[in-house]
Length: 261
Ligand code: CO8
Image (cartoon, rainbow, N blue to C red; front, side):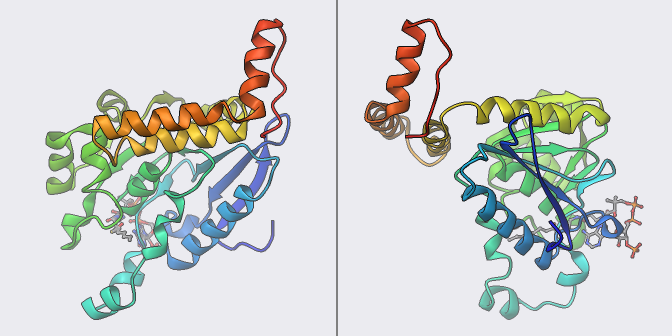
């Protein structure tokens, strides 16, 4: 749509059930300026409210997914402006998205770019992708999950190494570490992500949201509390038409026809 300046938005997939958001600030390697993040939030709102859309893919260009928060925007800020003004508090919008989001990362995913990828539910990478938390080189530290989501994703030693040296890791190492789930040739990455998104979107959107919430809750709770939460959600699926349809379709040996109820 023409109303955005820093992102491109379209619907993809045979059934147009995948929302594709492409970060599009090529001159700044998709640095995540405030305006871009606000547009991203609006696009996510629209896809979340669109009953046709079952999954979202977030990507950048072949050169850069995103090279971080906008350093030129941050350069002159003071503590009181960042703290008092709640600087970049709205970044969390992505992490609270109800529908699944797949990050398709080609090129640089640095600083806030790596953090934005980690706010997504699945990360696919192109063979030339580079992930890093270089904030230490700028005299600051990660501010949107680089010290929190990264160690949960790849463990303390690797996360410490990345955050304290500022060194980047490549796609193969990111896959080995569990940061990304699959690696593709750069030109095939977005189509592969859309294909996975179509598969997710073919399921009940209601049950997909419940499943996503349950997996995300594993990061917040002890195992016992998490098992309890999961069981409650599992039981709750039995209150839905889609659970009944899914099991009936299996027994009747036919495809399920989910209605998101
Ligand atoms: N911010 C602003 N502009 C950027 C950024 C950025 N993060 N990254 C690149 N650019 C600009 C460059 O300034 C340059 O602009 P110009 O042509 O006007 O000089 C243009 O993009 C192209 O960049 P380069 O010429 O540097 O391209 P190279 O191919 O030589 O290098 C690199 C690519 C290695 C990616 C290099 O650009 C780089 O190191 N970029 C900065 C990476 C970085 O430090 N990122 C971390 C930023 S800090 C951060 O993200 C904190 C997040 C906190 C979030 C808190 C939320 C609550």
